[in-house]
Length: 253
Image (cartoon, rainbow, N blue to C red; front, side, top):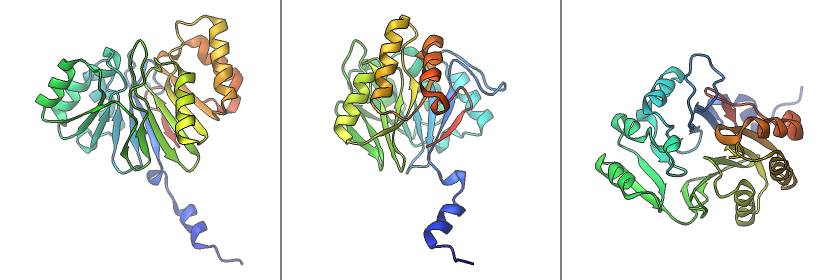
């Protein structure tokens, strides 16, 4: 019998605990009946150097409740990233920091001074983001992309390519895709988060989603502000590469 190489053995012995993953803690929809859905978004990133909490939902009590039910310990998280200053992504921050102030919080530079002051008063490290920067090995922020609502997204580098994590894609999802591809010269493996298409008409939705597909994005996992019509069309366009997510979903990347 042919002996397995060391590389093959490492691959076969690798468990899900070793893999990069994202867990949806808060979303408008729940995949787990024990978890509470609410209009907002929060996602836990694991498998990299540190655990990262991306956005903090609209309600801190729901955030902590869902964390508890998912076995997520707030004190184990070292980094918080806020995509943009809307309430449904930031309102849970103060409640989270009351449990764990020993974190670095990355926020777009244009955030209101009140939020910056609250972060600093909690004794957390407040890092204001303007340009793209490396948060830790293989995780980057796009930097603050300008629009009616300025926003940063996260770029996760994996063996499969880039996973792009969005809050609400206010600068326009295809604009974000274009800037990421031009900067990093890599294929986008998956997009996860809010596509912000829930207010768009059917024609606009189809045009935007067709452009996403044409850009080479391989998989999509839309949630939060994407909207039912857009989700249905994404399912049609992506088929088996459409990933259904909600509170409690764990996505291995």
